[in-house]
Length: 178
Image (cartoon, rainbow, N blue to C red; front, top):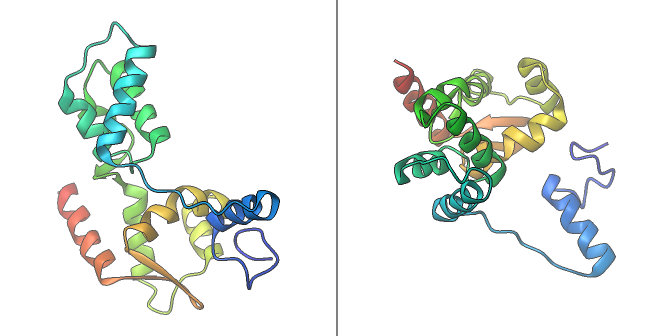
């Protein structure tokens, strides 16, 4: 079975393809989703806060910090916003509690990057999941897409490998932790 749960390895290229293929097979719809921008995330956060937390006051900078650290994913942004409201606007404390180092990168991301970098031949999906003590599905849905999208790792026939950009990101994130 392929990593994404599809037996037809020739047609499979990742988890997003599962949904694209289902839409195409059923409705003949070709769908390409675009990423949100930070500005769109800020707008979503403002709308959400006004609807759910009308009384709470937050400055614009808080929304921008959350958007920058949300991986431009509304679900992550809303979770950070709610925590920030519960922490009375202390977004730095929220980021620390969520182990976010910088720009949405977490300590777990740093661990993964270092692990992959230490294995020059490449690391398989099962190896990464065991290293993280998580399921392969969790890794594939929650962690890997962000690292792939940002060009920090690549998938090869021999497993995941770190890129030059990934090595630079390791140094940058470690510097932030000091």
